[in-house]
Figure 1 (cartoon, rainbow, N blue to C red):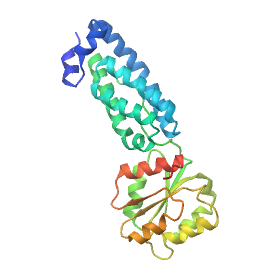
Figure 2: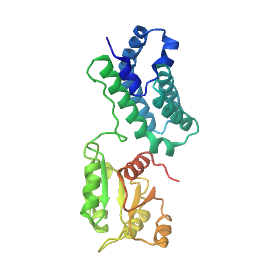
Figure 3: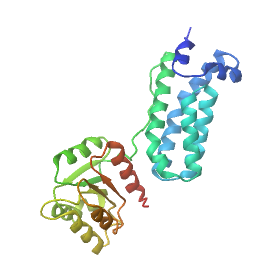
Figure 4: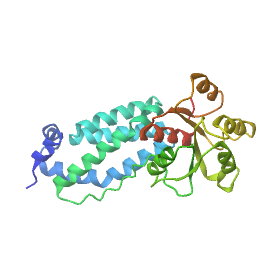
Length: 260
């Protein structure tokens, strides 16, 4: 017999669910149906997020919330409700910032349910916040090998990352055959030889910002420098030391060309 105590110990409100389903046999059947459908639902949710389609995102978040409530997945229901509300309010920033937490909880629930059901976890959820493609490129312009390698490692399974150590290399890369594949540039301002502002000037004079979205990554620049950078149509400024969440968020905004 399956041990429902294991579900309870993992935060699943069985007693609340049984008020709806009546007995464990019906509950278990519904759990099986959940496992069969959850990957398609979450993968579609991811696609709507990537396309900034907040209307359909809210609809799917509502559906996920309903499933979670029926099955006693209390935390997942709460998170899904937050995303439903954000979708209805067109709050793209909230969705991007908190999407990983939602996916993490979905995966946890799937793991718990599979263990309870005694089945292998064959659910395939694409939890990458980016569209996986080898022919899409992120250009990192920074004289620090640590920064270059950090971004490379972060997107190792999703994008090709190419690097430039100064502004001159960046401009040459923008003018190369890889230009059409660049989905975004992470640009340091303070570099030897040709600095980041020279790159921004070049892009401005050649009307390249619509083709290559840019975010600034910076550590020691003054407030005046930051203000000057925002005079160009950049996506955002990320202050060093940054983390993986900061970078992924800004790359998502680059893909969707969301500027504030």
